[in-house]
Length: 484
Ligand code: ZN
Image (cartoon, rainbow, N blue to C red; front, side):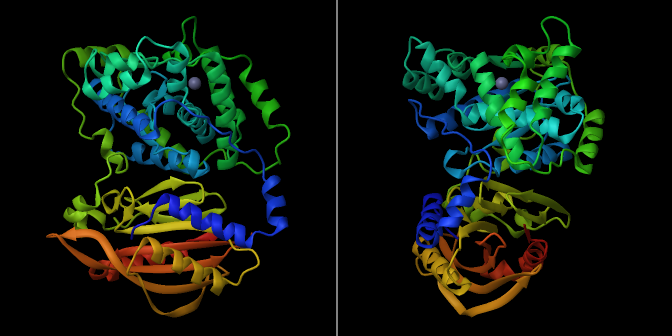
């Protein structure tokens, strides 16, 4: 199924305008803190993402990174996606999460989305909320585009456009040299992204909102940083020299959140305890060891920065090579919870996207604007219209981005964990191309009248000939779907 992000958004917007009741608008105003407008910079989003990917590739040459298959990486990615899910899509980035086999406490973010967390940081976190705090803080630097804004402020000799060209052209010292213009130092087994104290205060503030929305007490972010200050002597770990203390972080967070509506936090999880155990056992090196390894050419990573399936999206034509083996669920399940929705999904699939709009899919089954295997989950403001009407409108909108899509049969009533819904099969054309030929696709649409007045809908997608193989998994995912 093809979908354009803009299209999905405008669909939501149109329905919201058609259906919004005044009380829905009032509710929106009292739902707690909103993430700020991150502002504009002088290079495009695509250029920022390309910059970040270039730099991430450089990091993979300089530092030992755990392979994508490692349970610790899977855990950190799950946590990252949970945080990402609360960021409004129009401001979000294709965040990706990597774990560096370094025992020192550090984490860093690159423009456009790549985030690296050291094993030492996971070992040092006392609960999931502290680790989420470090990650939310890094994600906020990306969100606010701090490294790009920093370079603009410095008014470096070359314009940003030239820097960008230099990075892509690998001149002027290559990616490392050009990234230095962005306040980053990459090379010989280390990377350093230095931020101003003002940026730090802002990343704490934005990070606190992300944590609150994802169900973590924002104080834990500040407490983790504060503990770092207390534990180490002058100089401190790299993290503190890159992220200078803007003042009393705990007090600042307390002040920021004092007027937010109270909520229940879930600051820990059994998964975190297990991940921390794994972090104790995984091989990790000191920063000095890594520098030696990089200098003597001993860094050999098995995964690449494109390994989490999103940052190097195959175009639709390249999806022809996908085999059923690459996308079949591995039999285990993991849990997703966020934005009033929880469900379980296959252990070897990923949750992508953010806000109300998620794609849950095997990395090989998605391209930038198309899904060949997986589930799309989205939500609309459904106030004042019948579920049949909203579902009919939804199908009409899906047909606009998928010409030739047909509805197979009428809407059937369905109940999912006590919630009324409608179920209908659709037939369309798969984005997969085999031997240059297109093939038919089955799309199973389920719409649900959420308790908060929204309509949540899921589309389960697979090529027609594979759909029966995936159906038991899709039914399992639907049975696990709970709306709060
Ligand atoms: Zn920072």
